[in-house]
Length: 403
Image 1 (cartoon, helix red, strand yellow):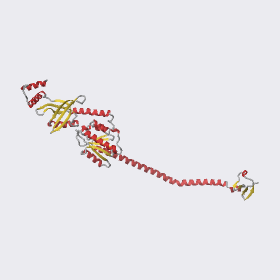
Image 2: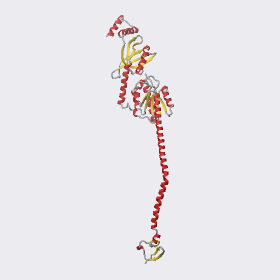
Image 3: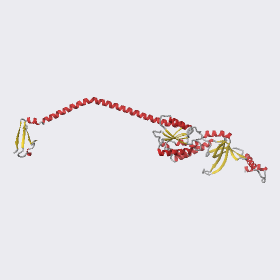
Image 4: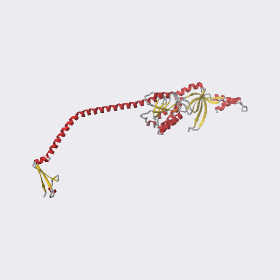
């Protein structure tokens, strides 16, 4: 109603029947807005578009209904270069990301209507704390959803292989961080083998690019089983490009991946969601390389220690056996002599027993031995009439016939 009254004030110079040029009509609107909306206003909105041109920032603002689906308001906004060059660095340092579509923002704006370019809101300030609060809320919602799906800790349940030498790397091919990572592994004494799966590591394409790289790795792994782990590294990028690592789709793909994933995103602020769901998180690509090298060195040290213990135990065992062998060698003559004496005594006893049963000795004692057909006669009933007998005495033999 107030605006309508003001418009009549400015329109008193024109009557309703007078025809106006478009410029005159737009000029009338401009004067009315400048008088009616002279102040600046803080407005909450979502960015549906944000682009830079010649140092200026052009934004499209949107507000959705409570379900977050249907737009209920739209507007254009501009931030001129003189203000944008101050506001952008401050916003990015504070929030850790750039102004991108989908971001919730709190803007300080004033109304402007230009006869040639129409209406727009002119941005003079941006409150980064509002965006930080919205970011924190969205991060918590994603984390909660991952936990409800039961996949938030899946990666930490995996184990890095003992010999973790075959590395699938997701990074930008031209990134200095990737070069440092590869050089550090190549300079180590271990036979690391890496394969790069290039991906966009900053800007709006981060999510889909990394997911596509993970799908390629999965396909190769399914066919050949040639990787021990995956390393996602980003070096040299701006902190303001971190928003791509805080998405639900990327977190779900990483959490469900069957190989352990190590992240070295290269930032000092709080962990991104990608870090939270990965198997291990380090700060930089070189730290990721150092982790793999240290792990290989620890394994080598453990193997060297085991080898030393085996050699030491073997030498101790050989020394013990050698001492036992020496002692046994010294005792053999005594044992042999003792055994020989025992056996001689046993033989002597046997000889005495044999002498006691010697037929010659029995004959000397007055006994005789009778044979029938060359066999000793032990039972007379076995003899038949007419059998020829031969009886031996100490000093002679007689023959007889059974009658």
